[in-house]
Image (cartoon, rainbow, N blue to C red; front, side):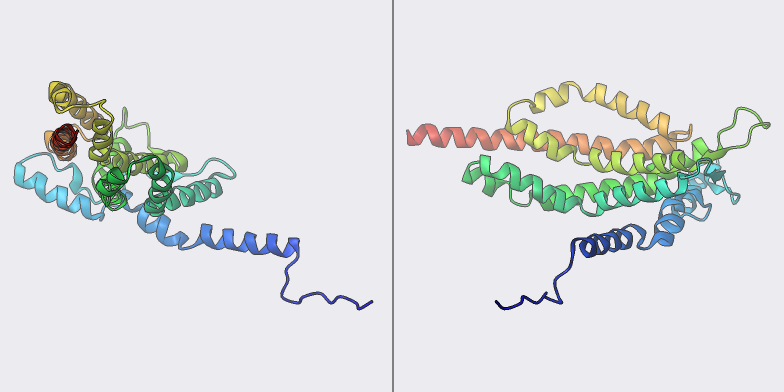
Length: 269
């Protein structure tokens, strides 16, 4: 009986685990310095481009010069043994979610599309591109507008000169992450309204009816996450209100299209 020889190219189970470990390490620790020093801690630095722009706008409009400070707003510290390592891992996960968002939408679309009619699938072409574009626009808005405004106000706010702001690393990162992810999802409002209108849960009349309430809610949120001046609140509120108005237009277009289809179907029968 001939003796079988092992394939030198075949990997053992432990070899596969070792290979997987190095893939995870490379994907997690790739560009660590750039992600943290440049991206994550960028809004904390006084030379962040948003502060220079807002400083010029504040001077032009005659508002306070809160964004013109040249000193660091606060210090970031880690008070937990595994705090920095945990922050690194979770930041990598969330960064991967943001970068892979178009692919996540693609997988979601593959799950939903078999339940749609052919005409509905054809009318929804470009969904992944539009939804991804809106999401990345929201992410940029959150990173360059909402996050700096929040960090500038919350990081520099004090109740007494006896208290110095030493912000925990996890708290700082969660503030940046919340601003970026929340704005990315808020910018998906037109897409959400499109599908809600398709299933009959939303109409332009409903959106118009609650427009004033939406305006008040947006202004309240803007007042909470921004410094206490009118310019900052307007900067945050205007894009959201534009998205709301765009959603009303999209909802109306969807209903008109559905009405035309209903007429064609009635004539054909």
